[in-house]
Amino acid sequence: MKKEDLIQKYFKEVLTPQEEKEFSSLLENDSDFKLEFEEYSNLQKAFKINEADELKDFLKNIEASEADIALPWYKKQYIYYVAAAVLVIGLCIPMLMKPSSSDLYNSYFEIYPNVEQPVVRGDNDNASNNVFQAYESNNFEKSSEGFKALLEKETNPNFRFYYAMSLLNSQKYDEALSELNVLESLEFDYIAETLWYSALISIKKEQFESAKSYLQILDNSNSSFKSKERKVLLKKL
Amino acid sequence: MVKEIHEDDLQQRLRADDKSALELVYKSYKSEFLNYSKRFQINTNETLDIYQDAVIAMYQNFTVKKLELKDSSVKTYLFGIGKHKIYNVLKKSNKHLKIVNEVEDFEEIKVDADDLNYYQKQLSELLKNISDSCKELLRLYYYRNLTVSEIVEHTNYKDANTVKSHKSRCMKRLKSMVRS
Image 1: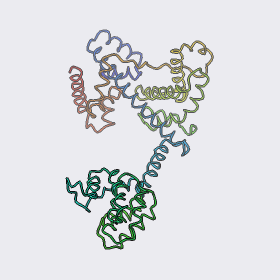
Image 2: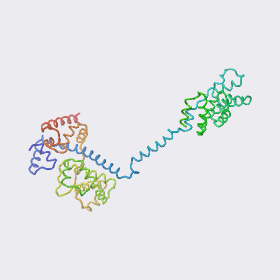
Image 3: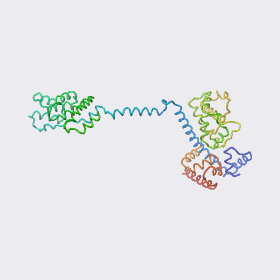
Image 4: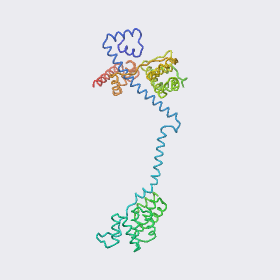
């Protein structure tokens, strides 16, 4: 019998008594045979461990799929992922559908510039010049007081508009809105702006219906002020 | 399910390295083995692991040694190995002596320890990285103990000489990897 067959038979544990004798004798006396046997043995052990690892994974997979089938739906692991996904989507939909009032306000609000009275530096004698200078310097506390004082002397709708803007820029939303309300029915330079900022303050106060009506009035006017923005904003409300 | 198992057919499939037969055995006797292991003072978390190791040892004895059970069934053989594995765990936790004489249902079947020496560990890693065709050929020869003519029968090699020359090239490659 060939040596390699003898070795394979040994590992299959099928050597006949006679073959066993032959095998033992070769192992003792034939160094090549001994080397071949040892090589076979080493390779078999190495393969056996690798195979055992793969078989373990195979059985673990069976176990995992059985566990999954056996569990009621509410105990299945993926249900947590589904629940998490539903929660995330649930949280996102209102955000996508209707942005928060603050977000909407912040994304559309910008300080209205002084276009009424260009400031003449050094002209300290002109009271309104000083007030508009304060407004331009973002000193809205000072400009609020200034416009209030000016309005006491003169009922100028343009001053009232900038008074309202000064209040708004100082985050005094209610006071700003009540000043704008005075201006809404007037025909004056900043009527479109008045309606726009009234709408924004309404949004900030989550009074979306009144915000809509301000924007609709603005839409019906011929003003081109914020024409794109107000259309987009109307759709979002 | 267990009643449907045809013993000879099952053993033949196990010898032929048929994974569906492995799955059948694993599923058929699992609950019975887990139940059986309750009589030992053993952590229930460990019993599934022990069962899996016992199934693997049983399967490897069929695929490697071409085991033929004449006076025993696959189940008895599996439980014998399982018992041996349970005893090993108990020995480690010094509980073995308490129960060793109490349970005489299944004959304990000892299986080879899986300890590898340094060289064998090195081989085990290298065999994972060798080409797929070499791995499969060497696996059939050294692990499944198939003769060259059996390999020709089971594969697409055209004849014994092709198998021999490929095997020889694969061994050279493996040895060069060991040296490097």
